[in-house]
Length: 597
Figure 1 (cartoon, rainbow, N blue to C red):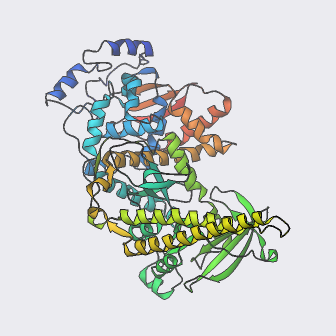
Figure 2 (cartoon, rainbow, N blue to C red):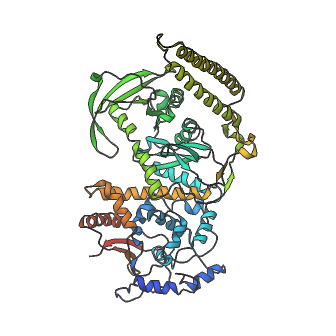
Figure 3 (tube, rainbow, N blue to C red):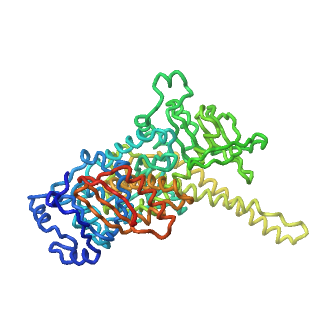
């Protein structure tokens, strides 16, 4: 939509009068409808259903707070922030546009405002200037709009369309996919979530699990939420692989797959949690290659088998690895490739693969690049607050009759077996450590020893009987039942997830946009690890906004940063961003990025 026609296009060629932060603050503080709500006529008309949405009009302004986040707009649009939004989402008639809400949520994620409530502590008028509005919605209004947008299954459908778009635009990133589960710990009391082991805390806590599918560079494609996790193997077979078979581009056609049984569609890479010879066999029958660590590697190989190879990592760096390869037969009589890496300490890391075509020097870096997905989880927790609870409340888990859970009676019996078995093992260890006293000691000592040993043996016999009985009782109870058959007091529920799925998808878009910008900065930075830190600074930096209606441009002018190296990197970024000739959504203004001269 065009810029508001109230702005005259026949203005004389005079420098625009830029407002200062003090001037804007004073004006916003006395607004009739609240802090920053200076568009009184437009807001009253929208509230009565006589107008709206508001036109996007950028005002000339000095030192606009957080305006540096506008540098991310070309990347956000390129990775699809506003793609398919009009067909998937709708807002009731009001003051704010759909595009403004999505842009605001993405800007908040990049500026590290980790919750909607964070807007309470930010100047609403300044954020409004970044969006071309008088102010952003207040927290309650924004929550209402998020809840409306997240209704039904629209967020999931939108994420699926973006995933297909990402894979299609970069098919080389979809040929090898990392799959791993991320545990979201829940500390509330409303939902009755099952317990999961949390590796980073080494505890069993109430949590849900999201299984992420990422590219080799760590960029996410999609996630599969599981409130009651059946395990990585089941999720791979039931949810992830069938979807990938449908969506991964550039797969060999049916004729090629039938002609060459060793040809594969794509490769899935996972850790030891997914190790299963039967799983490898079933996925091989679907011609899906697997890459995982060997859970039971056995004895070390002869060191003479290891030869140096030049290996190119996912980061582009070339290193030398000592690798060796054999064909091995698993417990189910299936032959697979085993590649081992010899470390400097002499440790041998074993990798199994059903990819029979790729050279060993390419298989090894694919497996060892799993750190990219682990880093993604860590980065998203720390910077985007991936684990944050977005909305309060609990709800029933859908399709409860098909959700398998451990039978509570089986769990109680299993705990009893483990407890008694542990006590039995301790008694056996005590008996095994007893030493017969020498014959020269008094007879009383020998009698005391025999009495002690006899008492222990009696206890052991009793414990063995208890273990046998408990195991028989446990065997008589089915291990699994369905969720709907549990008593009401023990039935699991889940946290409300609709709004979280929407915000998580926006966070994935923001992460992809940030990654694209970081890759541009790395071209001119000697320390690549500092690219994201520089972007963090950029997104929260003040900038001047200078619209020019005659030339139809919106200049985002940034002040100099902390050092010359950062300035040079930002100048390089400005050149790349200006070459995209991005037009701000719902306007005719082409974005121009520059540093203060």
